[in-house]
Image 1 (cartoon, rainbow, N blue to C red):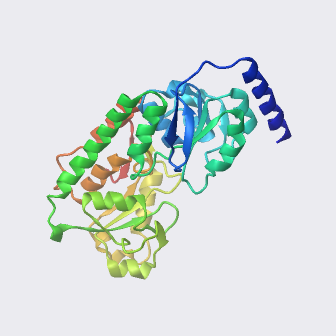
Image 2: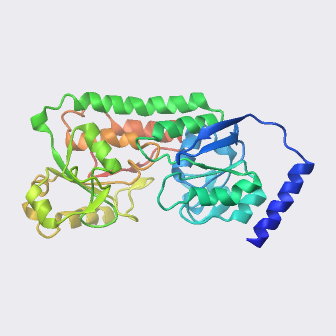
Image 3: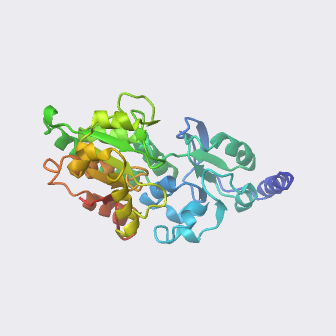
Length: 348
């Protein structure tokens, strides 16, 4: 920390001798609910999270990113340009290299605002004395995604591009709900949605998947529990006997962007069918088990998960909508990378 103090002192002297040209300033509210006075448009930023990086790329401002986390840099296929930027953190959940950041003199550092593993204010306490704003932008929650997109548009002087992206997501939600309204109440299916973290760890009422299931008109078996995630007794699962079982792909399973169907994915599905006691479940007998890539429903493109879930759960009502076309538009038009990969297995 002593070295950081010397760097801060040197920068303060430098800024006093060479004042920057005046920039527009305004008060913003970030995802953490903090009111911040920020100079913008931003031209020099450090980005530590993939959702924020995707939003920035979606509004055409990726060239203003000076440095990233290793999480971004490690995926050269998806981040051909940003993977070449300096790395200042292992991930958004790890303490960044403050000395390197201060030396770069970005206008702002962007990380998660409300993620439980990130202390955005602690980061601000270190960097704001050096004149570096620390801004929390989640970019991965349904209830705040549109606000996060608008904030990115404002910060980077790209309001029109941000509105275009929001309109794209709103169209997907609107088309999903329109089809949901055709489904008779007696035809609604029940779902056990299992987390990627471990077996019998389910998505409850407070999870992001609850929003998806509500949007497509399905009943979450665990909707009666307020928790985002909770452990499930295998006997309870048998008693509830859901129509479908959707498993969020475990970490390391090769699904999602740039992947092809491979034996580990086939083996993972076979393991689901082979779980002890599951042979009596209707979902197993009717072959209604699916693995869902974490690339669906975890970032700015998460509204695209809605038609994917719709095609799985209600194929007769969603047969006239192509989730893959939405995903292709997301990757090629808003992210500037070729569309490839698979996101649901078995594919629908």
